[in-house]
Length: 460
Image (cartoon, rainbow, N blue to C red; front, top):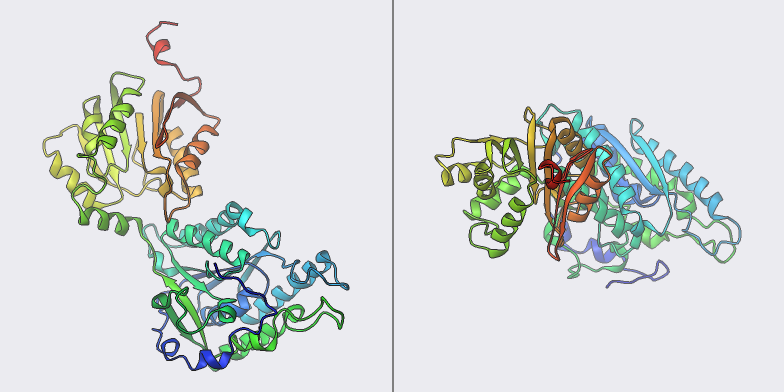
């Protein structure tokens, strides 16, 4: 684990300037950029790490939205002259001026989260970022180019706890939304050295700054006076960013670690192209048993019209078709639907439909909706919409079945526990079946007041 102090001498800028691999980093491709959303852990991070990008994007005609997580009130914990509350006021004023200098048309949100405690505020960060990203995507036509929206945030391994937490939250939001992510290092320049094995140099991209952009970045950095100059001559009021640290951000370029947009269709197309049965649905006893438990949990013996969300290669779909007159099986991946149709060529009761849910919701009503192992691929707001859509299309006697893995889900915002907690919190739904194992959670919900199996048969 990397540790450092801002009081350390740090890596000299001359050493970085002599690094040939840094000079040879591929250029950052910003073609088609429509909206840039920049997250900063503290006031000044946006200028230090992404000031040139902000100014460049604004001058290129892109919309720029800056979100500052904290007011940076803990930057001088031993100051004898400035209270944290007063420092928060100063730093909020400084960031407004700096962002205004970089991009006068940019919008700025200061969240006011506690400085030094972002590791505990991941949901708050993700909520704010998710709202901004979804607003930006909403300005594009349906199915529009997600590459036009880019999220920039501190590098998630910058070794400052707040930077790491902010970067991790941004990575989860970007992955779930399918937008590009640019991670900008700040303290890495201080503790790392050229060629450091802790740094993903292969992902590095270089943004050359035009002279006018470089000048405006220098102007913006100078506006963060509380960080670049001493608060007073007293001990505890020293400048947080000494001359050596500032040199790293006076270059003619900025460096980013780039993750391209993650598109759900492309992601799952790749998965299904790599294997005819990517999750071993047909060969795994775990999967066969889980399907049997799912089918046994259905409150009714037969259904009129069922919706399956995320059908993959259609293994569960075929078994649902034995219990339903009609099954609408959807998936975001055309490749998955091709595999499914090949497996069940004579399944007349099944309609295979390429849809991105919950946005492209099929016409109801349905008396059975099945969401097995798909809920954590939604973002929080998409999950909210999914629940609303289910309520709107589920019949009064219908069943909503949710079954999700309880292990770690890498690269997505939600867990299986998150999905089921949201469903249980919905006032219009009532739990009919609750089955928990070490590996997965299966629940069946009905509209209130929901009847149990015994009540359906008049036994109670």
